[in-house]
Length: 291
Image (cartoon, rainbow, N blue to C red):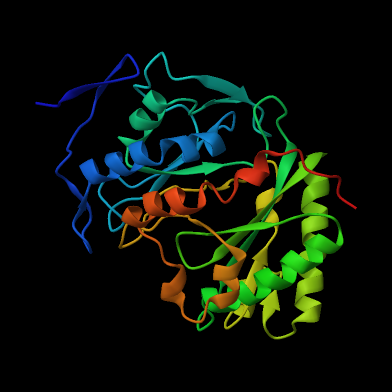
């Protein structure tokens, strides 16, 4: 029988709590839900007012993975939803605004992905993001080198950047910006990606084509497009281990010499929050204009 739990006055049926989601470590669905409850304050701040795309993996990372952008069937009436404009016509998406909604969504077994804009101004970004993706044999170590260059380059334009692991192979750079149409943010991000390729030839590419990415760091600027999303800070990822997209300090980035130094699993996050707080909290401050 599926247990019923009350969260902030909402009744939730949390199913299959003993099911192993991450076979490499034996991490169960119940432990996943406990993780999300533990980091809820930090995660909810980054989810708030941003329509969520779910990357679901109900049978673990080796099972079927599928994106769900529209409101899933069976969504409780108390979960907030909003109409989001799309080129093919408006769609209704979920907003995860509170702990009960977070636990309901986590019970789906999902990654959380969000855009760089909020629902009150679709397509008007308040963040800029660079997704640094290493092409083998490059690793997150090379991503860190590129991240340090981008940090300095952004600072030259008066933009303070912050870093988090992707929770997979790479690194994400984020910064707050003054409300700016997503297309303009994308154009600026592309300029910097092209500049990075020029300044670090043979080590960086701004092109998505797989054939040119071997041994290089792909500076993916495309996630600034209004239609795109990025893994939300603190989301678990569909990886062999319960890896988390984790905010990191610039000292950690500068000191990275092997990939394992920037691999953080679910049990690592609460102690990091206790030690550092939310390292991405400055993103909630009003950003400056793009140059």
